[in-house]
Length: 290
Image (cartoon, rainbow, N blue to C red):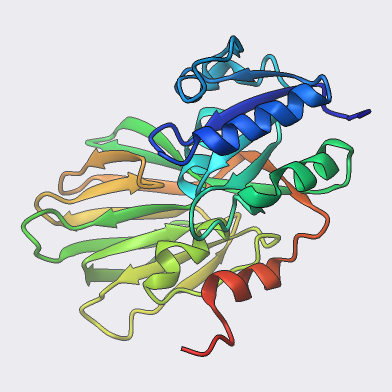
């Protein structure tokens, strides 16, 4: 097979009991067509009989021109964060249930992946959010999120109080269980279950979605990708921020979060048969009789 991708990186959901079979099929498929590949250490442990070249995920982009992710959307989110700033494209094989990002069903991986490797694919760039956390005038840390940044209450359960500004203009004070700042990618995740809108991934936008606001008139707002959002935690003992539910930061009162679209983007490859609206119908069960 004369493919446009010559060396493939493979990353799987390492703690999945269902990884060994599709991983074995993928490796067999690549070996059949004499394509070289590398595995990350945790994925390699699922196929211990193989003597594959092992590379850490963070270093994989230096050696491959395509990364195949086997797992659910959470696995792809994790890999995307590890490859941030590197222009290697990714394709997702869905071993999970929803699969908004990992859109190739595992039962069709050989057929669909062959099309991608031959160049029959649609390329899609997805934006990330960059968050700076400031305390007492000093920046503590910087975090990235493909789905969302979530500020939420602590274990004690009391509401938190936030002050939200956009482009240095005051928007509102919010008393709620929290606030979701989501990308179009994340608009079908936690933001959707909290009443936010679905945003097509081709739109470069950001959505603010309050979580159980005390004032019912606090509604979701869709902003331009050029907007800079500043959130100040005014009150909320035990409050914290999480980034794609994979990175967490405890917050103090008067902490400032400055959130904007990152310069870096990730590149996803889809089979040409990929249909965003068909995917929404399937995953959200639109038109299904209950």
